[in-house]
Amino acid sequence: MFKKLFTGAIMSVLFFLVAVPSVDGMTETEIRGELNDIKERLEVLLEDVKYFVEEGYVKATFPRIPDGFRFKTHMRFRDYLIDVKYMQIILNASPDTRLIEQGVGSPGNEVKRFGNLTKNALEKFQQKYATEILYPWGITQPTGIAEIQTLKKLNKILDGEVVIKIMDPERRAEIREEVLEIARRLRELRKKIDELDDQEEEVPSDAPTNLRAAIVGYGEVRLTWRGDRDAEYFVGYKATRSGGPYVEVGVTENTYGMVTGLEYGRRYYFTVTQVIDGKESGHSREVSLTMDVEPTPFNISAEATDVGELTLEWESDQPNVEKFSIYRAIDPEGPYTLRGTNTREVFRDTGLSLYTIYYYTITQTIDGEESNLSSEYVDSWFYNWRGGTQPHPQKEKILEDLDYTY
Image (cartoon, rainbow, N blue to C red; front, side, top):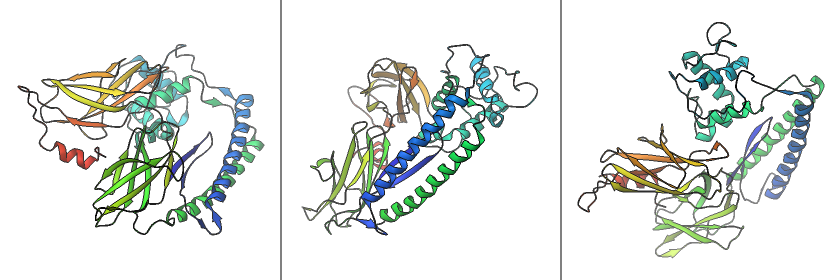
């Protein structure tokens, strides 16, 4: 199964596509064809909207914010920064994110202090643009902290993304009807696709079933499946075209596994086999995914280089990276604290405690834009003493539970 996200100025719809024969008389090819037709309709519609944006709208401007200013500093409750004042100006520009109507913090009376009014307004702003600010981080509730994705959105607004002036009422109504019609047809197709998802291709009876795939990070896919209780282990395979040839990507005793090192923008096809009594089964049904997650640093590793010190290294396949930002947490998935930056793919983190599990993630900044967080790297600090090491007592169990070994 693979996921593809259609996003535009007017709607966002999630499709789940699987490779199966047919349902209710519609084959996979027919469903894909109809989805392509809808995509073309959306493209035409978005061109129409773009025309009105360029011809009938004017860009929102913020004369009290200096030309060339960019939001770069993270902001949180009780901060006192000029950036906070500029953020308040943007928040006050929209009635649904305004701090207050009158008094300190109201339009024209913005201040540098990050108080409760600013926090409440920022949370409304994050909820309003949740698809750009919250969902890329895997969260659904606003944080009230201006970090990477929030700063990106604020900068986009500064660049003139927000437009004002009402569109021609008649054309606006026509576009609304077109969007509703597309949404209706997409719901119908989604229902059919969900029905397809419950079916299986004709595969060998001894093969694993219910294979699923999901992108979990840049260059990384998580596979899950159902296997026979007597299976000794499972073998994962990938290919760059349907039907193979397949290349083995890993072996595991679990009914899940991670496939890493996949190329950005490329489509991959996956299958799984199981080994019972020393004999490998046939391939499961094939699932596919296009690696469309934004590039981030990858292949993070760490080594204890001194007492209380870890040296992190990683890779990036993107040119012109201006800097890497290294974040650390003591709990899985944060909250993260910025530990520092570097222009090279190495960083030395100090002040670490013995037997403490640390979680690292790294971003890269290109053309002034910071990427999303990389996949999380987890490890304990190794205490180097007289050439020996003392790993965290539960390190192996933690790594196994997190499935970082596939």
